[in-house]
Each structure stands twice: as C-alpha cells, then as structure tokens.
Image 1 (cartoon, rainbow, N blue to C red):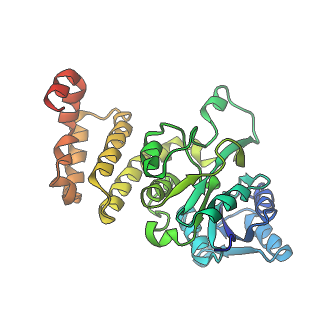
Image 2 (cartoon, rainbow, N blue to C red):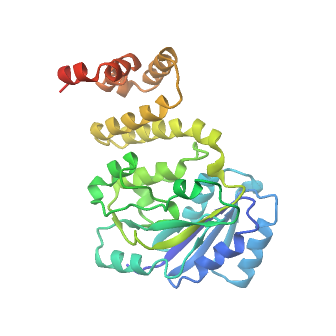
Length: 319
C-alpha cells in the first residue's frame, strides 16, 4: 500500500493560526491533501483557508450545509468522508506539525500490514502567559513506554502511562469502516472516545513517543479550559463508550473496566447516594443488557459505598 496521507483539519474561529497549521501539513512530503473543514466560522478563518486553496491544490476547503456550526466531530467526519489518501491524520487548526511528522510512521506501517495505525508524542506551544503550575499540568501527550496493542485500551483508560492526542495519530482510512466515525453527540471528549474505540478494535503501535511530532497551541480560547463542558460530557463519554461496546460485542470485562473508571469520574462530582441511585436505576432501564448482568448490582451506588466503607470485609467476601 502506498503511503499517502490525508490531513483533516476542523476549524472554528481560529484565523490567527490557520496559515501555520495548513503550511505545517503541506510541508510533509507524504501529505497528498489537506481537508480543511470550516465549522461555521464568523471571523476570517474561511477566507484565509480559501486563499490557501488557491495557492496550493492540495488544500481542499469544505463547509457544512448552509455554513452551519456542527461541532468538531461532524467536521472531522466530513473530512474523513472526503479523504482519498490511504492514511488519515488529524490536526486541529490552532496546532501545527513539526518537521518529518510522518517519516517514522511510514517506516513502521510499511513493514507490517497488520498494523492499523500508529501514535506519536505531541507537545505544546504557548501563545499566552503561562499560568503558575500549568506546565506540570500540561504534560506532553504521549505514553511514557511502549504498550502491547492488546493492552493499550486498559493503559489509556487508566492513564497509567499517559495520554494520546489526535495530532499524533496516523491510521489507515479503512479503520473507520469498523470503528465508526467521531461521535457527534459529544461536544468535547470526542477525541478520547474515538481513541478508546480505536484501541479496542485495531492494532495500534507506538511510533515516536520520545520526540515530539506536533504541538498544540495554547491560547486564550482553548476549549479544554472550559471545565463546565467537560464536567457535562465526560460522563456521556463513558455512557456512549459502553453503548458502543455492547453494539460491537466487546467483552464484558472491558465494559467492567469502563464502569470502574466511570464511577471514579462520578465520585468526584460529590453526588448524594440518593442522586447516584436514581441515576443508576434510570441508566439500567435505558440499558437492559446491563440491567440483566452482574454489573447492575456490582455498580449499584449503595454497594459501592459499602465497598468503600468496609474494604477489608468486602475483599473477604468478594475474592
């Protein structure tokens, strides 16, 4: 298979960064097209992209019907559907690739046809003043060690060895036939959802996890600074992931892992036992497959509370 890469760039009101992002993709010799999807921008983003398209035929600019704003998932999905390269890579419009972004990817993927994709280290570029303690929080998006493909999902959901970022992924275009597209029900955390699904169904290998291949732009308008959105959609991420696992007949031990980390997220919200019980009962009614499984009781809030209060006794009764 020829190593031709289509780079998908979703964009919304990022005029200050558009040119840098697009040029960083075009300078990669493996890139045959840059699919720039404007998501209903109200600034100069679309105008700049169209000017870049005039200068280089590899730049292909798209919009949603009637120029609507449909979100990052829908924008990436449109780009994927229009892509012609054998491989897909992603780049947010306020980020950029570094030199030789795909050189090691090509070497790895060309040697083993069973590999569906690879992942790389992604760092940060600050365009604003660094807040105290922020550098420690914004660690490079990479795994700190190589993880076997069949253990990657557990490593990612537990964050045991770090995180991955879409800017560091290179995947075969055909993986979307099996994994599906980005979940348009998720306003944020859609990237984590996709990476989790990818790690469950595909063989992903480490490419360059010690040297950066791309950088994320840190500025005043970053969406990851909107904590309220993540508070709202992180629980939805886990619910949607379980739904997808059930639909794709993923082993129940994997679903068990998802629930375990999901309840850690919910615990941080400091809900009352009554609120959690009502939530869980409603969830079970909506998901009868879980209702008639051992997990309906295992993750019942009152039982989880008992396990927390009496861990020693619980461990004796539940080896």
